[in-house]
Length: 411
Image (cartoon, rainbow, N blue to C red):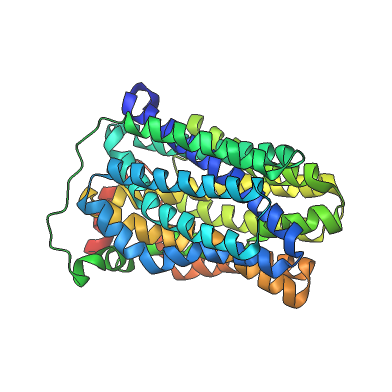
């Protein structure tokens, strides 16, 4: 249904190509860093360096997304990503790759993603009618996961020939993403005319804090991803625990995303129609269980199975959260709310990677992963208790959800 609309098709292709490029790039960077330094902590620093711009600029990024055309913001961000990819390619080709230089480039990549994320999330409701929004969320999520499958998988195979081949492909993909973004014609965004003050910059944060459903959904994903950043340690599992080399590393990265894609694709055909809150909580608990199994596994095939399951569970939680946040939030606030959501959830991937790198350095790789999985299950149970409104969310139909939420606010 969502693909009936040309602007959504252009957006979908732009996002898929962009995510595909980013995941290829980060896969190559992670592998390259571990080959240069051989330290788990440095893999964590790769994530932290990308998160730092989110943490510093997310409120500004959200305000920009509400005060300027989101398409132009997206084009600017893709242009900066192209420059970063060219820098990685050039550095690798001339044989001058160093850990500090890689971190410096990742800072600029993080800045681009900081401003891109709220603009991308907030533009989706403008591209399709309300009745097609859930389908658009499902297809956006499935495309995102599909790109994340292909990105690590292709990068893992191409790394055998050299990281420069990965970076060269990334440059091309970013150019294609920019071209698709340029084709988006929708211009129905409600531009916020409120003056840019500290109060208005913080409005998205205040909006979330006052709404139990949103803060519960975002907080749940935050802690789940933060504690479940095991994918940052995949180079160590591939090299030192499972002994499967670079090809196995690519397979491990891809299998997580295969599970996520399978879950997201299922939701495009069979969307969640009831008990959405309970399903979200159960999905996060299953995600934690998958992390534990992966952490203790010494079998390549069992590890692949665990990654598939946790990827599928992750796609379910993303689907529910995106519907809740975008439906409840008015358009002139979506940029600022999406920015807060991005830093709590999207950027928590990078913080989770840093947490995994640090704990692996302190306790060892396997204990760090297992403790993270146990913590994720605990958080799911805790949130079920302290956020009853989230637990009681039933239908994700926009009209039903808004009507029920307004009743909750009135109580």
